[in-house]
Image (cartoon, rainbow over all chains, first blue to last red; front, side):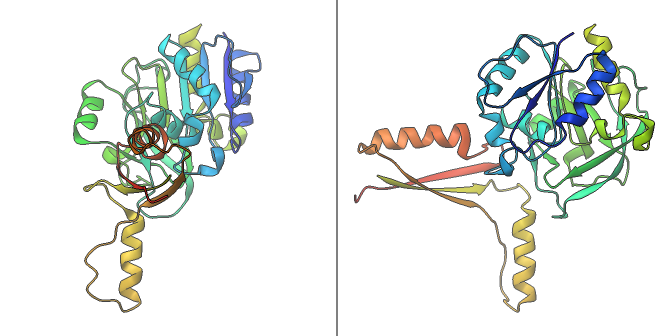
Amino acid sequence: MQAAVIVFPGSNCDRDVAVCLEAATGTPPLMAWHGDATLPDCDLIVLPGGFSYGDYLRCGSMAANSPIMREVVAQAHKGAAVLGICNGFQVLTECGLLPGVLMRNTGLNFVCRDTRLNVRNAQNAFTHQYQQDEEIIIPVAHNEGNYFADEATLASLQDNQQIAFTYGAGDNPNGACLDIAGITDKSGKILGMMPHPERRAEAALGGEDGKRLFTGIVESLA
Amino acid sequence: MKATINITLKSGVLDPQGKAIENALGQLGFSGVNGVRQGKLIEIDLSESDAAKAEASLTDMCEQLLANTVIENYDIQLDKSE
């Protein structure tokens, strides 16, 4: 399978996620620069964490309008799986592949710590190697992770099992609606999440809870 | 032609920065501040001289990039004096 990591100016988790993808697929992913207008056909495209374009205007807004994103959106519509982590989640909402928006944390502080997550849908292309409602630990590191959407959108996310991860009870770091940590599109092949699975994907990093996300999506696409 | 675009949070959307400013004003002794909302102001210099075309183009800019209409409203003011 062909995986790609999109590298924006200001991305800083691109190489970490590349390590996870190589561990899961056996081959290094394609690293694609934001200014490229073309992208070879991919099975999986990852938008990594970081501060693309310095978070100018709104987090993810400039990246969402970069040349490569037209290709990413086109391939997503053709069925490619897309994973957006942290800043990548912000880019996915800004470009319209996922609903809602990530707003400033209610505490106004940048939060960098481990969070307890519950897997709310363990049946999509990314999460099927987890157990339903399993509690896992994955770190967050963000200033704008406060997921917001109107009531109708939130209801639709619930009705269609699009909420993949929620923060554990009492562990919501940013004020997100419904404690949302990660959502998918209706197909379950586009996942955006604020926590960083690539930062807890091998024992040397303190735990392996994030690893099954990568092995899971690779197994789905095999 | 010059344009000024005001981008504000929709009512009902929590504005933690506005809240922090409100609290700071209270701590400085300014009483009677009932609410603070923080937004953005963007100034744009356009080569277009037709006001209707300029307004249409600015609306597209707001919809595609300048505002996130999930949470924000925008208001376009055109300065036609030049």
